[in-house]
Image (tube, rainbow, N blue to C red):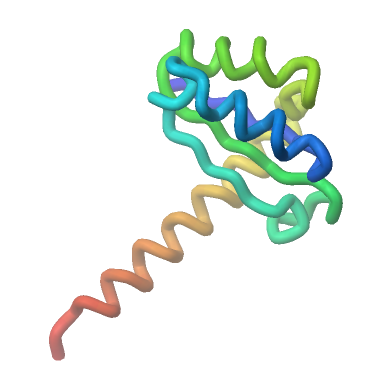
Length: 100
């Protein structure tokens, strides 16, 4: 599975929504977060696209005019934050459903 992280200016949200509805991109895992919650700029959104190499390539093509991919060194750190957030949510849901 491949992944890419994009930093999209908040004012480009409508263009982002159009890209996320693309036939191929919509079949990939998509996570959108306020960048500030992950240590980024307050006026941006971070978008994580995970899936096939064709799907991430298509997302990159369509998002290119709106927001280029985050550079690899920064993307790794942001990706880890996305995963930590998802793991924390999973643990919380597990605790919610655990019987004592």
